[in-house]
Length: 163
Image 1: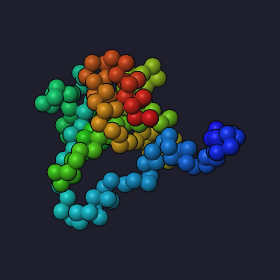
Image 2: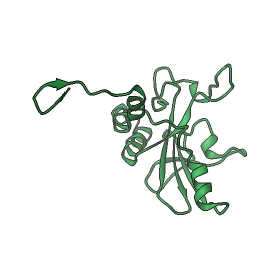
Image 3: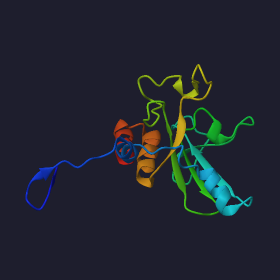
């Protein structure tokens, strides 16, 4: 409710599209790779560091986060056990991404119904049921602490921070 100068309350109108954009980030609108191509042309240096759940990792990075390497010709970010990543393009600012499931939530590798879903495909389109979504640094750090410690409170804080 908004009050005008005569102290009469009027209702402010919000379009459904404005509300949807305020709550969800539409990953189709922003394509970071095509933005990089437009900005840098063919001279793109892309550095990717990929993280997973503690215990499934190949090595610990300098921050003691469980990290993955490329294996058997599969890029680390395409491996089914990849849950978070940092992408740095041409020594610019890092972009933090977390895997999101089909319902729009961060992927929970320890969740009650997540066993076997990390590799699942949709039946009608044969596309993975998850996608990478860019997020802020604070949500990323909470999610990384969750992957490292398996403490569900960090996962909840990461989701709250992102949305």
